[in-house]
Amino acid sequence: MQFDVLIVGGGPAGLSAALILGRCHRKVLLCDEGRQRNLSSHAIHGLLGREGRSPSDFLDEALEELSCYKSVEVRGTRVTDIVPAGEAFRFVCADGTHGTASKVLLATGLVDELPELAGLEPLYGVSVHHCLYCDGFEYAGQPVAAYGKGDKGAELAIMMKHWMSDVVACSDGTEVSAKTIRKLEEYKIPLRSEPIRSLEGADGELARIVFESGPELPRAGLFFSTGCHQASDLSKSLGCKRNDKGGVVIDPATEESSVPGLYVAGDVSRDVLLVAVAIAEGAQAAVAINKAFLRSDGFCE
Image: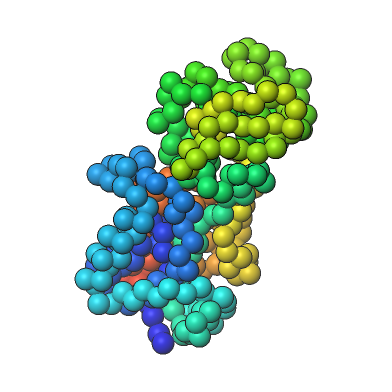
């Protein structure tokens, strides 16, 4: 199987790129294993024209739109290996699909490192969140908590004060620096440093945080700062240069990574982690890829 472009990842960035490349009559294979970062969330926020749309509805609509472009093929599988082969790339998928592509776009995204807290799983994406820009607005006027080990939760709590007034920092049995404690006091943010026993709630809605000692803390929401990592090792195995945040570095002139013919878009670049930005990055990468084809075919310089 030979393709112009292999797109790895079917989140907003990969889907957006596939749409643009389909409209450029490029033969595209998009491979996705269905593990989008925001699937646990009930709504996408900050996306003009689609505010409050569920991530699953967004994906269904995007795939329906892509089905209009016969040069774009979508497969529900994971790309397990990509190897440079001359001026192209050989690839292999978990379902046995294999072939070559002239260009590769990695839109594999990130995986959030969830706090190891009892009771978190049924609350995640409903009342426990990782992104203030995505979900902070809805908690104005409600009691919330900021979670993170060491200074991370406290620093998040300080930033959260712009969105909501009733914030408590939780460090889960870890020490917060004296400098950060002074900042918490300056912003009148309480600190609960006791280890957390569990999160309690019903129907996805957080009700309280239970500690190993001390009183329970009634809260309507919790935001956490525990980090994230690349969802795929493909950029590493291909030798892409990364920045100090672990994001793949691109050449601003060509939009390529340090590996010729290899592009990235969306959260894999670890810049601004919003759906709206991922869509834009996917479109930008697709235009750059098509321009590269046009140059090599002699249609432009």
